Image (cartoon, rainbow, N blue to C red; front, side, top):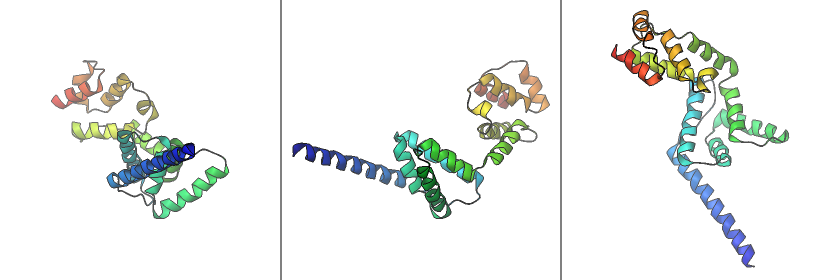
Length: 189
């Protein structure tokens, strides 16, 4: 009898903790995702949710549950169908599986490749140094070589290659291999 009561209490504690986690999540991340064609919206929505998960140290199972709770309208219908398909295939639905399917639907590969090409062709032109550095950071997330590997020398090389000629000429001989120092030196110039 004691074992049964302890088991029931543990189950209630887990359910209470999960409910409190969902309540905290929805209170702090109230933005729902409706779906539709909103490339930047889909990418930034996932990024915001991941930032919250990291801060709150949520486990993988809660991430999927809490995120799908925030899907509404077309996105909710998409997830219902996708979840059934994944379960039918016998696949475990992890955060990475959810994110992969979500991005395939709302930020398809061909558009990610366009962003990668935009990054590879990025030039400062008439942008201020701050604008160029911000655009560089934003677009670098779409280029696996720069996003998945921490190689500051490559980052610096790519950043320098897009600078206006007068600035590039001034900073290139310094052979700066720290990205933050390079950006600051370029700003000073």
